[in-house]
Length: 449
Image 1 (cartoon, rainbow, N blue to C red):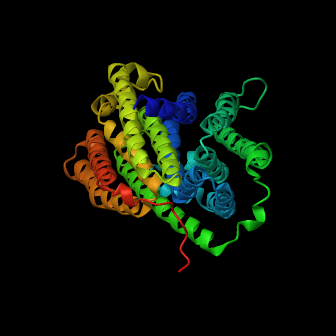
Image 2 (image 1 turned 45 degrees about the vertical axis):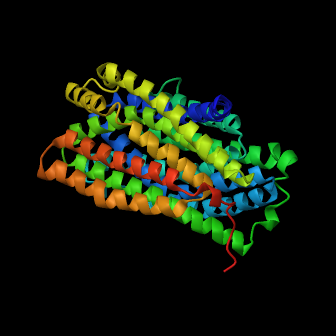
């Protein structure tokens, strides 16, 4: 077990730093722009939810690259892994253009559909448009990171994330408040900073893939082998299932946010502050979930799936320890942390109340991510799609409506519905992980039919 734990930590800690850098940057950015007022906090928070949905639709490509490349790496067949990565990249480019087009023509409509005030829509439209452009680069970057994690290069993925996220943080401050001779652009400056950071990261990822990794994996050699229908069909099918799974979750969160928005701008701001802080719990959950995908996938590729089951369990244990420690800190210092975001007493006091309520409940989000990562590693994507759709639309959304608008429980009702949903979701996926017949697990192959 200790051998597994060391292997897990060597992969998970760089992933944790990578996810943490994005989370910390997002948190500090919200603190920076939050000094402009609760309306700006609400705009950034709503924009984050919208971007989560845009990302979720196409995130299946990156998740598919991650687990398929991990299996190919374990099997010693990186020719096929590179081929599959090229197919994914071509898909990402097409979808990136689509995302940019939607941002260009419809950012104001998307904000309006969220249910925010007219002032929120007017003030936030151009910021959201810039975020759409940044997301066009973001989905390409996610696929590149999926490849890096698939081959176990989580340290390299971490370095790339830091190279992109630290400049975003610096530029957000400089462009928002006009420091060092730069123009004072307010919220627009924060959007430009994100766009510059994501675009720069795409260039770095391309350099790594086509130049640094070419000697070891001959990444440029197999470009012409990408268009094979069997492999394209596999990538499209798996990406579609994982993308719809993520989108079911993200769209339900979008509707959840729209419900909260109807409680008023201050309630919405408190909700977004609390979500921003609780994202520090999502961080180790994502990191250890990604590690489970890597290790389980590689063991499946080696033909030893039972070892994958064991390492999946160890990953969940370690990840749970991280979440318990983090939840303790969040519970004790909730008021002090939320006060960093805003001086509006109604906003930070409500946010602190929500955090104290959910500090330890986030363990269920951990179970969801840990075991979903393991199921991705074996390619059990159909179940992930079905369970995500079921709990998102037949549990989460109805409960949120019931607790907010029927029982009139306000923000607390919203969060009770959120964590009831995560509890059912996480436990369901954990049960599936252990009820799987691991002796029958095989390498994922394309179908000729």
